[in-house]
Image 1: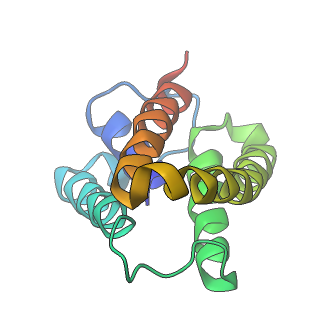
Image 2: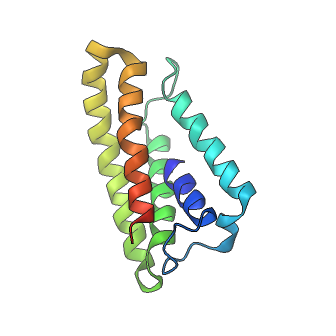
Length: 133
């Protein structure tokens, strides 16, 4: 949910490029708050020992779809499909690369520390991508 939450918050705060297709609905405070709450839930839940495997088919599909929607929303109007494809493909690749790296790191540093380190990279990167001018 992080990509969509970042796009909604950028739209709400006026930091989203207007060339993008993000509808005004995303800028609504309730939508921004709702997507942020879901993203926080995902980020917190990811550290729980019983969290489902991120490389399971349903989890990968949701990550790709979420990123593709966000990518389409920030892309210029004539490049929405390309934005969706690029963001979705990036999510797919990143899912497997970060899973592999985090699995190895967890052996030495544990679930919580590696999850927080991953979040410290992913969240600012998503914000920078959504608000780039």
